[in-house]
Length: 301
Image (tube, rainbow, N blue to C red):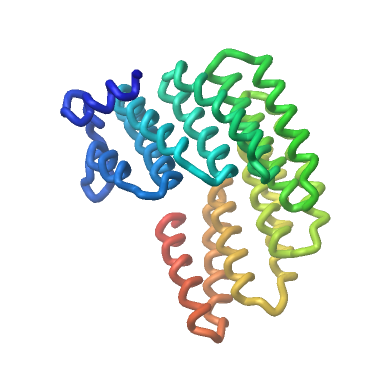
């Protein structure tokens, strides 16, 4: 098997996880070895996928494929049926990204089997859409890509909770965009936005308006994205009697403003979040909000 040959060479030092590394000076090879030690299979798979992308960017194709192979093995160990479907789809996508098409082809088949066992329709819809992109983008099978994207929409349509259905549709819209199908991405994002606007819970409505805005921005609809974020801003004001929820909603909004290139608006939302957080009377509730705010400030500003 190709993966085992890469892994053996990697351990012998013949195939490097290459240069690069994190800001703390940890090399990609060290990160790879550390990731292999993660006891939780899903966490191990996710970390290995992240390392594979770094290796691929650094030009270490063999190292990237070795990491994808190890991520695939970790994904197969996952016992939770929903997490397994979601993770296998992500590993299949990573395999395509690093040019390992035989592994990508194998993994989408395993993903299909895992999706059939999943009992969470939102997860199933998202995993199916990601699998569809692998077929169309990497495996040169537009017919399968179209079939599975439609299946993802059908699965999302069966979700009873409107907020979960909207979230699934937004995920699918993102996959349509990745597949280069902007019109379909906008159609699905429009359907999701209608659902979001009808939600009674202002916190959930504000967060999902932000998600929708980010999707519109990615498909080139910047004016629509800004309008949705302004709508989210107004919605947050309707979160009454819960300063913690208001603060977190404003932090989420700041992230979305930053994602659509509006750094000044992101800074304003952070300031509003801070002002709101300092009004929280219970210190045990206030501290986690301020900790996240400080991390976000470093990241966004």
